[in-house]
Length: 64
Image (cartoon, rainbow, N blue to C red):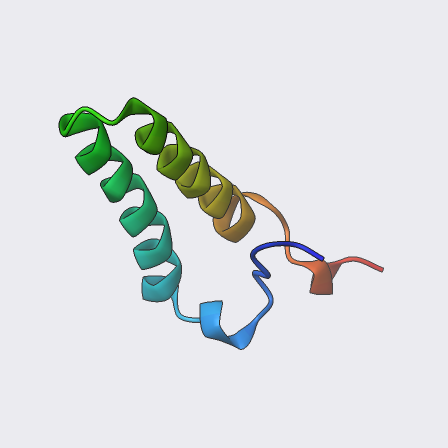
């Protein structure tokens, strides 16, 4: 079971996928700017994971 399921109906609109990735990466920048590198790395990794899960992989429906 994946942490983020790109086939879930919640992620069908593009703006929701962009918002999830943008919030995580944006919060990573906030944490880095306030001097919390550990949290910045954690949120940066979550944002990158979300971007790969939502935009970087083919959908499961296309597979046989």
